[in-house]
Image (tube, rainbow, N blue to C red):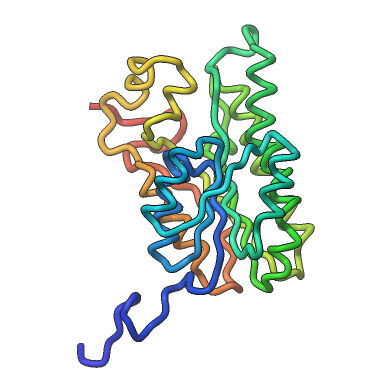
Length: 259
């Protein structure tokens, strides 16, 4: 129609224009896809992870900035925070699962690693960047949790325990920041096929492939990035407390249609 402006038309600014978004765990998967999507929405994107070779390539491709970050290392987090002039959006995406053992066969080192990366690392970085998020006047802290944050399953105790921790962290922080200009958002993806998640957890390509075998169109990283971008570009009085997103083939943790 004449006079109708497209969302990203030249006469209408991009939703992220003038805002800086930090994305952790950005060297692959959901983090990399989110960085690319937020850059397309006009954000100045800072990508963070340990693997600088991948980060540098990503930053060059999206016009962003790459900074090294190990969320399990307090000195790394402090140096990262000091290197930032502004933060409007923090996407806490760094995390992972590292075993599929039953409780009776629990590897406590794996439990400690899972909790350190998913929970303590997330707390550590959120705490470090909260002053900047407050100072922005309209900050967003977004947690990428999982449907494992909402339901348990056999062989998943180390991961589900950690993601339950992330979920309650988001809920608690939202209560504590009530009345302040900082939103707390959570995206909880179900089955997402990425190049590394199941491989890191199960240790072999065959086992990783079996997770998705016969599933018609599991989610991919771009699907979750789309949800994240939508959530952080809503008007700031609109808070997406929790968004659960699964592929159509997955009705619950236990019910997945396979062909």
